[in-house]
Length: 249
Image (cartoon, rainbow, N blue to C red; front, side, top):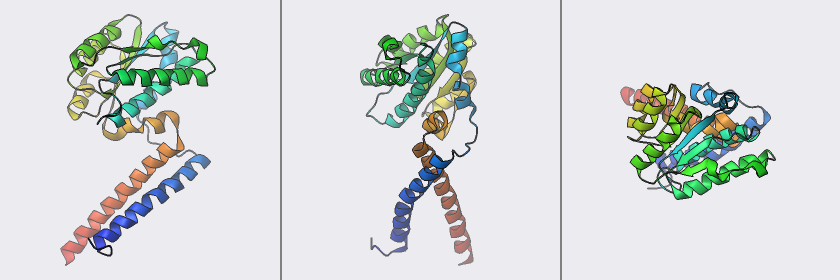
């Protein structure tokens, strides 16, 4: 494809514009935090550990059944952002969430995330690695094991963020039967439909990947969301202009 063809020129403009836009939005985010549209699921996580601790109970967090390094790495990263938020909140009260995973490598990553949260709060001595538990790589076995933690009387809330498919039925239904506060999010579309019927707050579509922006207010992540919004608007305008030009030609 010649470099000066219209398609190639547009592609180069977009490629050059993305990093410039990202840099500009990062600088703006560091000067003043932009307002983000409210997402009920993320708002429900704020103070969740504190409310559970007041009842003398704990929060269960499922990071899904996938591991790091695979197709679901982005989903796992979002789930770890959720764990980081809950762990930081709980470290100050020595009340970290009980985390269940299905992948050995994710077990180590989640334990490291928990340790870092305690260390940031100068509570490294209170770190307990058993708060992150490996159940089983098998989806059904994992669901059964996590189901036992959800059904425990000490569990006050159930948060499930990660790659979950049909095994979600066991997790979500158990929490619903106990009338627990449930926050759920998955990249699987068929699972999202199940989540809306059993969870109090469901993360739909791209909402799950905004965890870093909503929970930690990190400028680079907020900037990436703003760049995506700009690109969406640009794409819509380009489509409309193309339709008009095609209609008039």
